[in-house]
Image 1: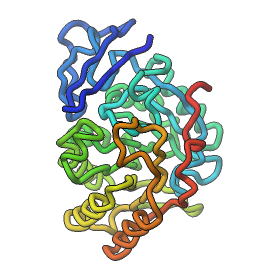
Image 2: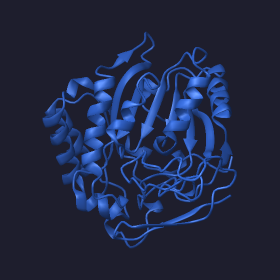
Image 3: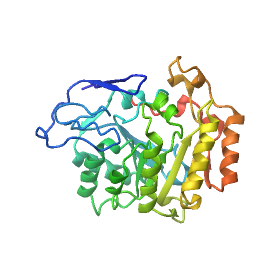
Image 4: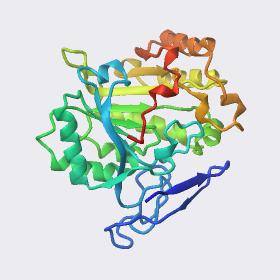
Length: 317
């Protein structure tokens, strides 16, 4: 079934659709997995993330376009989950994040998919936008405990509750988290989440408690640790620089890797956001990179050619 969500400019949500094949009884699970805390019984109706009681994935694939330490060998074993607890106006994956395009599967089948990807030689299992299914992901990992020999990557928008991140201890070895905004007005305007940064920084601190240092194997493949991603947006280099300074003030910059992304593509953004209807300039991106160097961060930068929709996965295949 297809779910449809909409978000207003003030950050409120509406959802239409009814999940099918749900098994939870009424009141058994009022969802509070993410900062939205919508307290919906997902066996009866949809959460603000768009998800019901069923685990839904849109695609699984060998992904070669992540950070170099994640794609050693054959690549990263990416599993894209449908739905999202943010509504970023410029999202390049709207067909799965906002429309719930995908296939409902069981935790047992999810475990099988992880093992299939492992058999193909991937360096890790990359769980993309997993937070609204974190409970079912743990079930899947319990079912294949002892069989999965490669690291599990928790690839998140950063809009997470630290207490839910704590539950991933023993399941996840690598946290790949965004820190999108510092300014609450920007996070409200572009992602309908005015409290984004407070949750992003608190959940990041919890990730670093669980994985306090970065570990690589002899190939340079990451085995444990945290990578913090930041997508530089056009017109907002000042907010990017504020994020870097806040991270340097709050955290040990040597305890994680920073990934500064230049891949923003304006074609996914509505015309009403005129300030976002262009790619970032070399000056904007280099300003942010130079600030990161000054503050002592280590990690990854992107070539400007990454700002192309050709690097967006085709969710029709």
